[in-house]
Structures are given as C-alpha cells and as structure tokens.
Length: 222
Ligand code: SF4
Image (cartoon, rainbow, N blue to C red):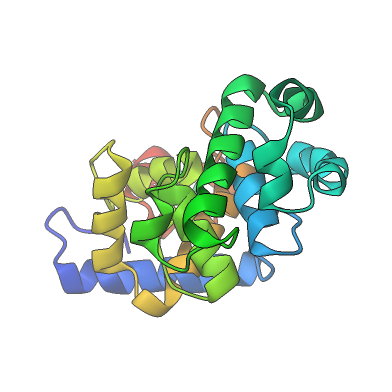
C-alpha cells in the first residue's frame, strides 16, 4: 500500500522495517565496499572515498598502505609524494592534507590509535560524522546512521526526511530505523542507490520497494 499523506510515526517505522526486509533480500551482502585490514586503513580509505568510487579507492590503497603502514608514516610523509599516490581518487591535495593532519593528531593525542568515540573522531581534521560512523560501525560494531550522497537522496525519495542537512537527516532516520539496523540501513540504501536508484535514472518501474516509496509510487502508479 502507498504511504498515506499523514503517516503516523508508527506507520512510518513499519514501512521502514518493510523496506529493510525487501532490500535485505536483494542485497544480502550489503556491507562496506572498501578493502581494509585495520581501523587506520579504513579511516584513510573513507577519506579517499569522498567523490570517488570504492573500486577506485581499492585500486589505490594496496600501494598506499605499503608505503605508509601506520599513522606515524602518514604523519611524517612527504606531502607531494602522498598526493601523487592518491591522485587518481580526485581532490587529492585536500585529501592528502586531511590524511596527514589527521594522522599527526592521532600521534599526538591518541598514541597513533583510532579513538572509539564519535566525539573524539569528529575532532580530527577532515573527519565528519559520516566517516566517524563508518569507522565506529565497521571496527567497533557500534550502530550509527551513515549519511552519504545515496542515503541523503534515497531518504528523501522514500519520504523519511525533507532536509538537505546530513546531521538532520541522520536524526530523522534514527527516529524511524530500528537502532540495531542503523548500519545495515545505510549500506542497503547505498547499494540500492548505486544499483537501481541512481540520481539520474531511478528504476522505479522495476524497483522492489516501489509500493513503499512515495516518489516511486507517484511516478509509476499515478
Ligand atoms: S521506487 Fe524509484 S525512487 Fe523509490 S527507491 Fe525505488 S527506484 Fe528509487
């Protein structure tokens, strides 16, 4: 059934549960697409993934992590050399600067380790809530809603938020997505955004959640 105009919070929560159920069947392996072997590698990979595909990041990181195996190595790296290694991920100057400043602070404040706290992580240069939530979810198993470009777009299409602000979107989603599924829900929307609901051509006609999605329902059944 299409969501009614004045959907109650209870109804919206149920609709979200159904979206999770359907998308989980289609994307049973929905998880982080970045290849990493420890928390620092994940943190660096997430920084590199801004405006870049996971595939491209995964092509760059084996050499990168061989050259710079820990926070100290990144902190002491030649900026120019670091920029060259990550150049193909785009925005490489800014990314190199953030990685290096971040690792310098990890060395001075956290003994080179990644702190398991959202508050501490977002104090690091170049680390926003999205990156912090990915790291906390993947490494420490803590639940958090990751709002990337796909989650932002699909949350709006699914009628779960009207906001453009990632922090507000995160809050809106935390109210309607069961806490135990915060990480999963983000992964599912990212997979769905990449596969069937890209920004330019959402495939509403063949989308398995069309009856649960106000935007798709309007397009297909009106
Ligand atoms: S119905 Fe259309 S807009 Fe809604 S999630 Fe599916 S593809 Fe995207």
